Structure formats: C-alpha cells, structure tokens
Image 1 (cartoon, rainbow, N blue to C red):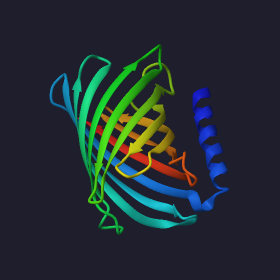
Image 2 (cartoon, one colour; image 1 turned 60 degrees about the vertical axis):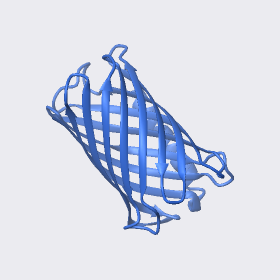
Image 3 (tube, one colour; image 1 turned 30 degrees about the horizontal axis):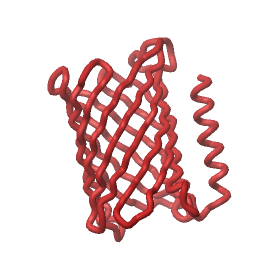
Image 4 (tube, rainbow, N blue to C red; image 1 turned 90 degrees about the horizontal axis):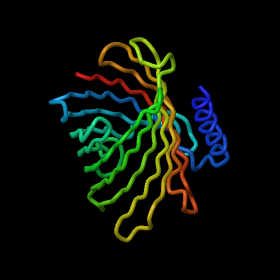
Length: 227
C-alpha cells in the first residue's frame, strides 16, 4: 500500500506542477481491448485495439478524437521469466487530424523476477516509427512492479496494482534527439479466469531536454482477455 500511495502522490504532484504551464498541458482518454492467445507453451500472440482522444488540448477542455491503434505482438518465451517479442502496429491518424498514418515495428526483450509477493519487470524495446515524412528510431527501458492487493495470491474478484517508470530516447535524421519520461499507476481486477480489467493514470514529460517540454496525462482503461 505504501508503494501505491507514493506513485499516486508523485503523479498528482507532477500534475499540479504542470498546471502552471497550461499551454504545455495535454490530456487523453485511452480505452483499450486486448486478446492474448497461447499457440504453445513457448509461443503466443497478443492483439489489441486502442482509441485515443483529447479531453484537454492546448489548455482547453472538451473531447476530440485523435487516433486508433491496431497492434499485434508475437512473443517467444526463453524461460519462465524471460521472453522476446516482435510487434507491428498501424496508427490511424489521417481520418481524425491532418497528420500522416504511422506504421510501427517493435523489438522487445523482457525479464522479470518475483521476490516474495511482488513481481519486478524490466523491459527493453527498440522501435521504428515510419510515416511519410520520416522514420523515427526509439530506444526504451521500462521498470514495472505489480502485486495483489489482497493476500499473496491473486484470486478471482480480487484487485491488484501495477506501477511503471519508463525512459525513452527518440532519434531521427536532421532532428535533435528527444528524451521522454513516463510514470503510471493502475489498479486491476481479476474478473474471472482469463479476464482482467485495469484502470489508472499515466503522466508523460515529453522532450524534457528542450526549451518547451510537454506535459501529457492519460486516463487509461483496458480490458484483457486470455484464451
């Protein structure tokens, strides 16, 4: 419980700080549906569909659709706590804004360990974001922690907590490097066997090394089905 209070306090602190610069504040709602399918003991698929829309834009409140993301990942388990994954994503932007659609390729290595009840996860990703204008290469590291909020084992109907901290580096030809930081906290429920619901918030400080860093908030909701 101490970890949850710390994460939520830190996010709220960042949020109050960002309100001092309304022009740099953006808020998004992002609901998502994901399906996980095990092909074998060592190979699985993940499909997800997410929608993102503004509820704060340039300091003004009001809802406005921004994009739809269609994502597929293929994951290969190397051991009980290590895996490789390769993903492809198509981002539909042009139907909502005067922006190019995007194809994203992802390569990922993940490993985790569980001291006692808490599980600690480390994720390394490289990405290629391809649009008509340019290709952006991103390098990402994420640290995650999750644990049940009741007892030592997650049972049906019980809640759990997930917290993450991530750093990103984006580089592209003729552009200056961009550095981002993200922190999130979510509470989830094991609704039934193979079905989870998660909701929470995420704060992003984008391009924080520049003269005009952007403060971005997400309200996240995710329904996850494992077949």
